[in-house]
Length: 267
Ligand SMILES: Nc1nc2c(ncn2[C@@H]2O[C@H](COP(=O)(O)OP(=O)(O)OP(=O)(O)O)[C@@H](O)[C@H]2O)c(=O)[nH]1
Ligand SMILES: [Mg+2]
Image (cartoon, rainbow, N blue to C red; front, side):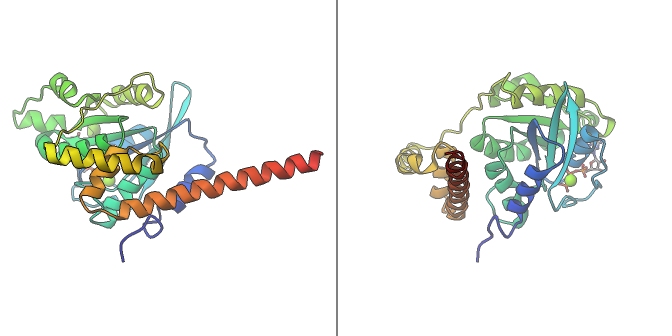
């Protein structure tokens, strides 16, 4: 049996997030490969003490925390480290489900500056799901130690999303990261991620699938990304989307039934 949003506990987490006593003006997800400093960024921004250490796989559940910025309440969600969002493991599915169904106002991908190429794979996958992606290039101190130079402006131009350098362990770059999160989450800056172009045959197949699924997605999901997942044979995403839309439909019905009751009472 495949993993479901139910089995990864994402729905319970989303409910808890909604019921939270601190009302969030924006919800931001922190994604990234294992061991790139996500929890260090999370702790630096929230002042909390989420477990960190020098071995992969420390964050195994979702952790949430808050910070205030420009009189707004920002909720951060620290996702487990993953190399991809292809839902091959529970961690990958948790991360993917939160990015897809948690409606984050922005996703910060924390990347390791010393092995950017591998880290960019996940960044490109996140950019395919949501344009509101920010790349935080962390461990800049380690890159410098290894005499590596990163042309951040060029990276930003190539990807089409904001790129923020950081040394999270020293809290360097976190103020800039907060400012960029504010711009992206509240629509003051609209990233324009470059989309990956595939071969002619794949692009033709994608266009055909997109036409079929577009109206079913009710504008809630990026149809190109869903088409890509389907082409890849990942049917679990369709099951999850179906459940998500079903839950929305039930909520809509409950809302209207409540409204009818109020009108009847007043008549
Ligand atoms: N040199 C250096 N080390 C850092 C930096 N940021 C984090 N670290 C260290 O990198 C290690 C991993 O950090 P974590 O924050 O636990 O990484 P993570 O991405 O949350 O790891 P997972 O939850 O396993 O995916 C820790 O030892 C941190 O102290 C940085 O900017 N520079
Ligand atoms: Mg972690």
